[in-house]
Image (cartoon, rainbow, N blue to C red; front, top):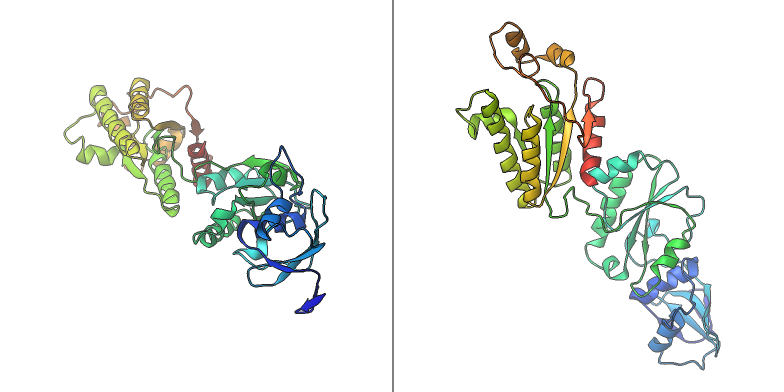
Length: 377
């Protein structure tokens, strides 16, 4: 019997690290049980291999790589598992202050992540999570030992600040352990499992096209710019294709006949498809009054392997006329502008858009949150 830093040691001191040390923490905290399943090796087996099958010892003291005793292991011959007694709390690894090794007692619910959530995911979680819930990063021992893990934890904490009352935590589960058992022993309902979901707002092929359609003055360009800014804060590089801007550069010389307007929208759709084809995000904001042309833009995007979303900015005509920053409605009412959408040229209302947003009643932030949540689906 020996003493080390005030801790009474029984049996040989065995230093462990890496996945074995991570597993020890789960066992001591109650998130893992050392029981054999379908012939799989147990902690007992793995520890026995490390100490060279020295099963003649009735007890071992398990320490971290620095030699700090963490647990006493009773090594009973013929027993299928060890009896572990905690001697001290582990101090290794980043994010120690919010690392989870015990059940989530008192937690209302948990959202599982394997990377920091995107802004779009956060927007969707705001309506799902409430005070007392936990945003939980689930990592393997290999990932947790990488040089980038500390940065990932910082991103997780930053995300948590945007969800009032929600706490953040991370759990490290060695790759050889039973992940299902660990999650089941969290003792908290899983609200959503976002593991394996991309943290960027990309479709399956890495690209996405969002078309904002609506009357002049409806706020579609303003909404598209707001979405772009939020995505840029996420370190993405979305491309905004505004109807007026494209007319000045790509569609220079086109008029406002139905044919010319359809041509302009198709060109916007073609450029957006090329952006998405290269893995980018295209935010298209033309009036796009005709259903046939909107369907053509969808076809172009889907042919490029991109995800396509149609967002109808449904701000009523009277609200758009009240805004009329360019004076276009007044000129159209006076007959100075012909074939003006909503006045003497029809706007074909989309029958089944992915979103319908009235910016006469919705705030810009609420509308932006809804678009980002849509892009994450």
